[in-house]
Image (cartoon, rainbow, N blue to C red; front, side):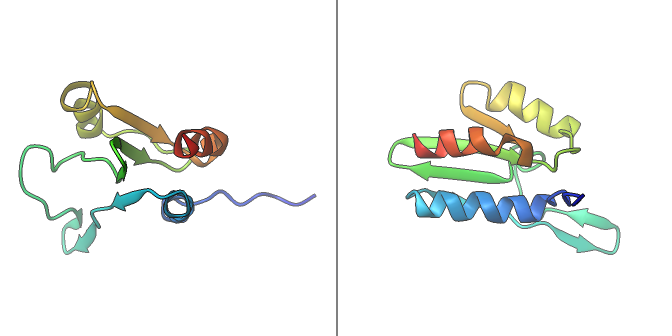
Amino acid sequence: MTMKVPLTEAQFQAQVTELAERLGWSWLHINRMQGETGWRTPVSGPLGKGFPDLLLVKGTQVLFVELKADTGYLTPSQKVLQSQALRDQRFYVWRPRDWSFVMEVLHA
């Protein structure tokens, strides 16, 4: 029996962005960097902490997408941003197990 190796968040992001580009979406990802005190994202402003992994744009469609491994969870900052600042926007949390839904959304 072959065991399926879970995708990392980075591998999943590569799959999502590849499909998005093939379907005509433009995207933005803000890279995190590891410093002496751990991981950080060098951004400014109140939306910086917890900002979703991907901003996808196609025509007038705008998607905010947080990507997680199948076992990942939203941080408190991400939950606040989702429920407050982006509550009226198309905000998604996608995991590898959601691939059919990801394809459905991006094909629309």
